[in-house]
Image (cartoon, rainbow, N blue to C red; front, side, top):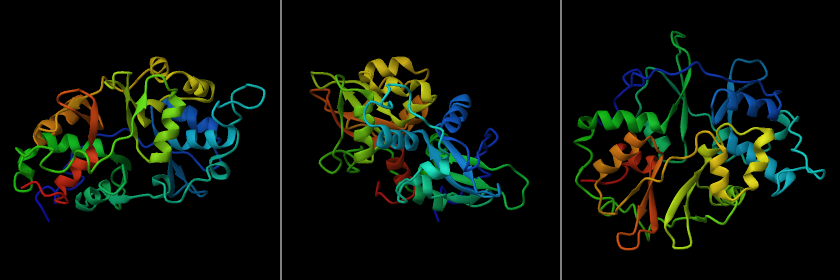
Length: 303
């Protein structure tokens, strides 16, 4: 086990808000309202006895359900907002392969090693509980790990050569094809493509092929039944309607070092950095939090 992997969740020193969860009979509309009220992108769902969290529903899950039921325009035949009175249990017939159905749970006193591995294989959040019931459960995210790493790089000195570039580590094409969307497309066009490609974000490019924005699952924060139809707007217009849009796209060169990328991710509080062509300035790839966590876990050779 590496020095970084031997860190425990207690060592992370996180101060998290109280976990907010709902029962399986709550309506989809009420679940969206709860997430909007607390500025959440996901919501744990209890079992019927209220003792065990059985899955974690996200705003992206709800959007996929609405699109499947009501189509591209997100309205019912009368043009009104869709009926979301169905409860989570009966309506969320999701693919069992999706993360929402996989609860990755660890104890507060465990080391983070197994969580690092999980975060490199499609898991974006972990439920941290306490077998001794001395601490309240909370959701750990990849961002928590990246921020801790940025302030404790010494724990990774034996694992990572910080001076190696992302090109040296194979984090740019042709190994990593990139999905993009154009600024003439609607937000729902982008989200449908994200769902089909199973990616959490895409760069928005203009007619010259330059990045002018980012559309991500985080941009569904605060969405409600009443505002769903805003997704039919051109993507840049949609981003103007939300209170916490994705920040100005953060970019890098394929010749930037891993240490530069780590601090860009942590300092800008973003989940990914777009790699741009040094001559044209067009996007050619992406480096995500998962990619760097794979380096932390020793799954990608950086020395």
